[in-house]
Length: 219
Image 1 (cartoon, rainbow, N blue to C red):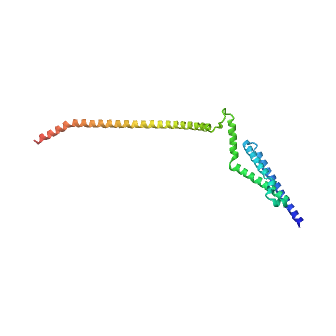
Image 2: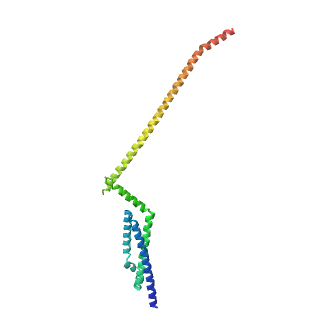
Image 3: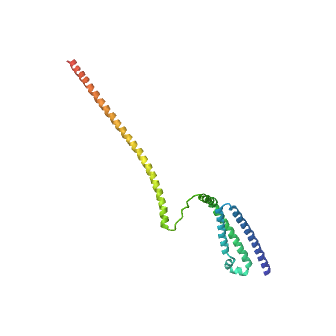
């Protein structure tokens, strides 16, 4: 009875080990394909290497000794099964982490963004001046940043001031034109009143003549 149980356990352990080998080979194939696809993309290739080293560090820390420490009754009774479980755990952990990394690359659109960084770096090689870097003294870095900010604000205020001056000049011209129109209108009204008064003065002798002739006729 014990021999049959041991044989069944060894068969199951062998099956688990075979599955672990298949999964690990598939994961390594995917990883190799991803590395090949990133050979022409320096930053993405570097990112993949960093993630691969981080994953390897994680897998190295998940050693069999640590794994068996948390399964001491099982590891003492059946070390082969414990080893097979550890291999399966490592394989599944590796596959899940690689899937998460691929999801981050896809959702974050890292391929396009890292390619843009590569292009910017290539364009920056032709610039004579080096890019700004922090000096290590926070006060100086803050002051340098504020100076550039204040200069931009000053330039913006100058542009706005010029716009306001142009608008004020245009409004002043409109006001001056309105005043001139009012003055011309007043002058026309005054001249019309003078002409009306002059015409009344010319008509006054004629009216007096008519009134005297009417009085003579009544006599």
